[in-house]
Length: 127
Length: 333
Image (cartoon, rainbow over all chains, first blue to last red; front, side):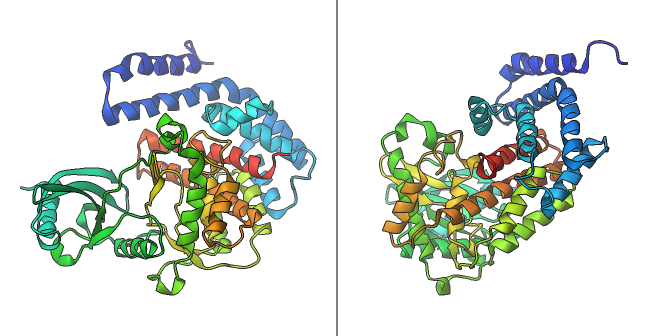
């Protein structure tokens, strides 16, 4: 167990500091790269908030889809990749389409929640 | 000691004296620099009149041996000239550099007025009145471009669909990180490869961002020919529809500014064959997947230490954008 502040609190305060105090002092390319850096910290912030629970659910979905007891998320995804590549699992397989949408929407909610297709999916209640 | 820009100015002054009638050079400015080319703008002056020109040359004035999928600069100049003869709107090529010019490999062309910034074409009020015409104009330009006789072309790489799929699958598999949605797209592409290979000139990077638009006239120049090749003409129509180049205008599939039916109508009205929308969709799927794989490749450049910038690292997290686009293309219902 780690002490406080939590990693989420630390990333959050550094991101706020960059946006509120560092960025206004910068210009040109340095400003652009600092903005990219602040956005990258926000990815980490959203991942810390969302991924722990989402990953547990993703593991459960993958175990069901693949009839597997594997608990490692990357190993499960590799297996899913293989099964899709060989055609063992297709979009007609019950649960696959829903799984791909759910996992992809989770990625987008962390990586790029402002992306046009993600916004569209939210509007269509796909999330 | 002279700086690279001063050295370039001297070279351009020599070229101007020889080829543009005793002109002088001012306003030399670097516009962009990719790994494969540099673009500079400058002005020549003759008899009190200024003329705006553009230089494209190999990085640092080298000999610009074409790397990877990019064509060399002499080839690019030749393609622009051939496109002009076929009636495609392109900048006029004024001079192809020879070794005695001391500029390295490259060429000089007229500066064309207009806007290339994708987000402005999609959203700026300046383009509001011309915007509904742009998709049709893109179709018209592509019909002329695809009609350039293949026999007149300089040597170009051939890239049939099946080889493109194999190439990007290998890159993806080499990286080793699983993207099940990419596998879904590779499988769909393999199952839906067009039955026949077609062989026309393909621009290869025909998208919002590489087209110069004028707020009144619309399409005013097709730029950036370095990824040109011989292949399926529908590749160009699919690529401009990839959501990554719609700049947020997701409901306007052509570059974020227009509709497919208008682009197809312009294509057919300008002598292009009847468009098969399924074939265009095939290339849109492949284009979307290609960009997704390229995002992971840029992350690889970060991981291996070739480019440790935050920007390079962060772009790896943009591959998920193409995954949601692929799901909309393949699994929306």
